[in-house]
Amino acid sequence: MCLAVPARVDTIKGDKALVTAFGCQEVVDIRLLASIDVGDFILIHMGFALEKISADDALFIIQAWQGLMEDGGEGQ
Amino acid sequence: MKDLWPILTSYRSPQLVHKMVHAIETLVQEKIEIMQVCGTHTWSYRRHGLDSLLPSHLSLLAGPGCPVCVTDQEDIDWVINLAQERQNTLVTFGDIMRVPGSTTSLAELRSRGTDIQIALSPLKALDIALSQPSRRVILVALGFETTVPAIAATLQSAHRLGLGNLSVALLLKQLLPALRHLFNSTRPDGLLCPGHVATITGKDAFAFLPKELDIPAAIAGFEPVDILMGLAELARQISAGAPQIANTYPRAVSDQGNLTAQSLVRSTFAPAPTRWRGLGTLDGTGYRLIGRWQRFAVTAPTDALTSLGTSQCLCHLVILGKAQPEACLHFGTECTPTRPLGPCMVSEEGTCAAHYYFPLLKPMGRTEA
Image (cartoon, rainbow over all chains, first blue to last red; front, top):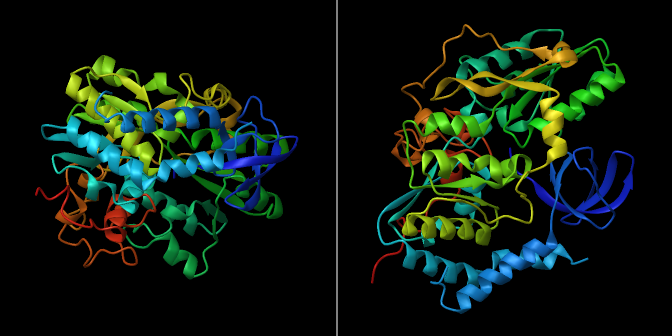
């Protein structure tokens, strides 16, 4: 039940946002986020936006691991 | 702004998965047991076959990470009784529908016409209460720290709407304090921490694991590479003998967590004792409504005995990592997802169901050449 899925914010109106997740559009409640903008990526859980997702952090850590594995993977 | 979708694709890269498995094999020289306490982790590593790839001396134990599975049998019966009161409309998440009660299940009742509505969001309970003012609408609130803010926000909306016919059956649980109780009797070599609980609580809330209990800990996401990042980090900590709390899911987890959600939860709930299947009643691991929110409460009877399991089902041991599903005589025979004996075979996050749907491709770990 702690499943949450990523989605992109398309439009915002009051406490609600229209988001796209896996090609589907859904209206979610955004009260739990202090700030949110159109184009942000968010995690959705039970109809609520739980948190913004940082694409920069996602890219940074995967690139770090890719680099580590190419170097032999033992120097962590 | 970067596009997230192509980045997430690399978290399923088979090439990277195999390199990371090799790195973990190199790090793990002795037998170690890693516990995870999130049903979504269980399902992800079974679905992607990760535990078939990992070395045989790295054991993955599923702990009490499925909210439906840890809900005590007395509470399941309580919810079933609430559904049978004629004036009530029960609104519940789908996972609990087929959990067997002592005499029936919510699914059976619904098939006979009992007014039970399945919701994907607690907000659906508001619509039902508004459209049926003569009914007493009871939302079954079930879940861990991830779900609690959504319940609090739903009550906030109910208050704004002036709804007098909505109540909440509170079965919410706090996983973090429960871990302190659990680790009094069970001590894994490392803990793979649940990424979406941590999204709300923040990384720092898990710091007691290494600091006070000396348990290596890593917060992990749910893609195959996410899970391997967490396991590799745990293997590194165990190998170095230096327990820490690591965050390998920084795209969704910050040090402090979601402060807005935390504030909403604090203004709505206070900690309370609650019953756990297999663990008994644990202080401070549940929630009670406070202040003006108390009027929404339907509280479970406190004098009921806590069930520690029946001879028919090992779920109470499976959720503590003390038994693998395959150790149960009924697994896959009398107990299947269509005819479950216990909640671990019902829930989409249950360990038994995960093992049933995604059996190991070969015995745990690689066959040595």
